[in-house]
Length: 78
Image (cartoon, rainbow, N blue to C red):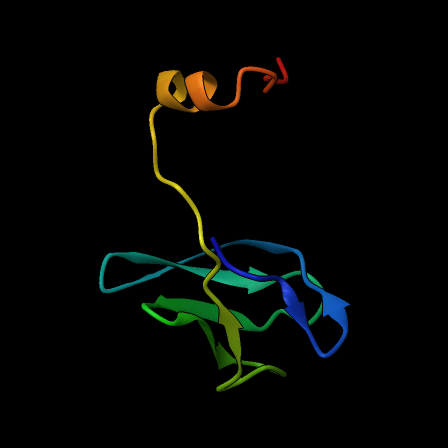
């Protein structure tokens, strides 16, 4: 999970349709900059935000049943 905040703006990230080294490259809809994931976060690899970073955020990778046990009021959109 990555921050979408840069220079006081919130970016909308989406798949670019490109891959590099078997990893999806993202783009932001505001500037069409391309973003590639590294351990530190997403780095701009082309466009307005070239060589800029969107930092990685702390998150949990878990199964639904474990999440629901810890957060019983969570709801799913259907």
